[in-house]
Image 1: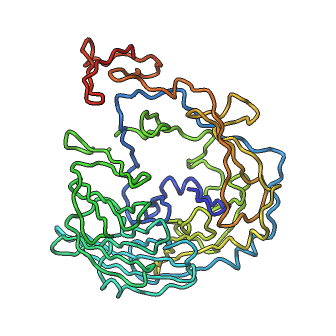
Image 2: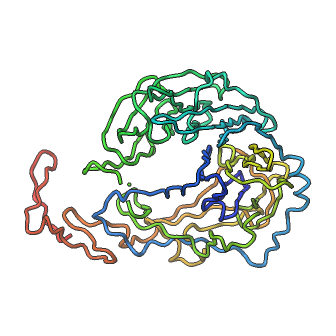
Image 3: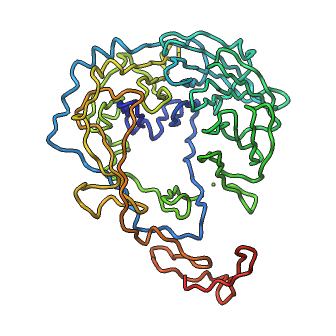
Length: 467
């Protein structure tokens, strides 16, 4: 699993990202993650094929330009001593079965840690959880469980952090006995919380509108889509039998709904390059080695030049059972948290490590640290390469072996240029579709030999087309 950290890319070995069992399961995540102790296999993420009648096109190819083979990858020197001085370890001495770490805000230094112990008992689950808070990038944590009245917080999707550095966060709790659900909300980076009851039981994590962090959506156990526009004070049911939901741009919600009353969300993962008009299978990256045969599978390696050169760093001399990794929010953050547990004959305890990479980048990037790169292309000089959806896009990326700091306010300048359209840029007319692995538009069987009528500007029109 890889995380981009303002020029720093951190990669844990692929065998871990694929799901290290040990005694704890692992889920990949971005700003926050949730790790649960389990002996069962994790469920694979699935994406619904929104437009099943549109056949996938075989012509979509994603390419990445290869780097120069003659570069040294030796520019980063003396990094071990610097990282040792900026790696902080904290041990949670409780008997909880799981732990979750979540960064709260970009550049705030605030991390929340949730430890959970839970056992099933007849129709209810009994357990306890503790909430810890750090204000110094994980150097030390304080037990703040009293801020949530010692309420049990879920180990799955228990923490939801606002993505826009607003200070908002939500803890999802369970109230034993009456099977109700309660949330604790904070608007000051976790310094204080207010509790609110929900009129439903959430099935998924509560998600924030990227444009307005006070607007929330979530799916319930009954596959109902619920919306709140006042940060969880009031909720309204806006659709039933919803299987998948995701925020789009400009206050748009995308969701898939089931017509047959079942969400049992699909057989393969697919991707769209035209805003959902056409879907194609998601391909495995070329030359990838995400399997148990990967070389040196037990090493957390990092890159300062967008994954072109990699360096090793051993952040602890005592082995741990690795269970999770999360970066500080923001695409240019410099801190990462790694956590797991140590097990011995006498005790078991959770431990976290927070690594600050800022000391590695000692100078500001200059013009010579960047090279021009053409997206979706192997050869930037080929005039026919790199075209996608009618245009090419060139931008600057770090040169291999560049060890420099481009700053939080650095903006990547792109140079889009139009190119000739291809068949992939067009869709079939109403009443027609493309068969799989075919470019020909053929008439839909259920509309064959029927008059295609539609209303246009208040008048009934008849569509005459060959597809």
